[in-house]
Length: 360
Image (cartoon, rainbow, N blue to C red; front, side, top):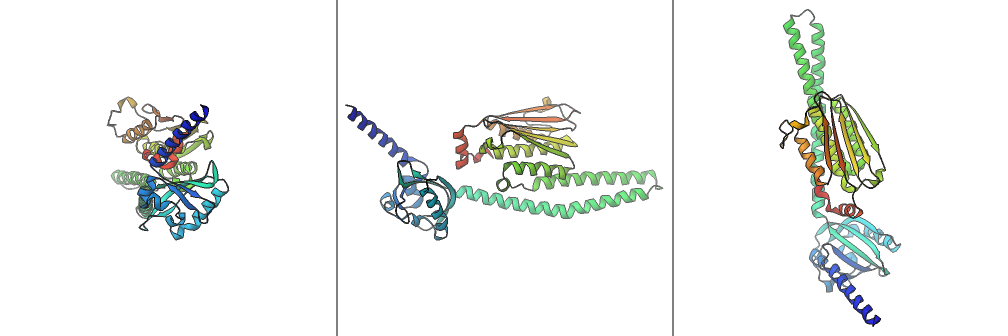
């Protein structure tokens, strides 16, 4: 009786395994590591659709057939690491039956019940790679424009302001009206230079992916202070390694928007950004300035007084399950306090697998 029940349970488990294997939305391969190069033992339906081969054609096919020649050395290293018992995640290039190439993200691991086999999941990241390429092109153009503004218009205005200050000093005996005009010219030039500095800060991209989150935020706050002639400080507390990857880009944008509000509306001379990471994966950000402040109760649903960034920031935060509080009053500065809840390991893994990019 027990044997019959065991067999029934085994068959049920096998059935569910087959269902999962065949209907997963990513390509799955099982490969024989004892062959050189590894031989594909089995592939699911998604693999058939993506690569253009049938399941029968996949069986016994060298895995190298799916890899362009110039990418095979990198994949060989992945195979060697899997043979050593490691689980490897990497991005590389694969090719379809018609030899068209496409970028992929693969996760390769030893089969849990048979170390002679390797299980590989493959995700087509063509759309993601295209987004990255477009973003890089936009950032490069923004950097070029910022550089041209800094070396061109900004330098010319700074020189003109210096000359106007000299003219004002030399015009001590000039009629009061002339002095007033020179003072007005200096004020206009100072305001224009400040506006240009803000524009340069907004245009100049910070490479979050290359620098990493915490160095990028540090650079962002430092650049803001330099470009706006503001004393800008950043304080980071808590275990940095506990910050979920899903929060990095949204927090970066939130801090960026908070600083932008200080620049456009605060008229502050100092700003303090505090970033606190909780050991459970939650996070909190405070952006505190000593500017002119405002009455938060006057902000309507469309932010009629010009604080459009606050609406965008609130939508971003609410989408992540967080909160945004504004503590401000006319003449008393402003503090934005943002909290984001802890993230489960499952959600963080989903982000790392590419499911969370919509948060931007």
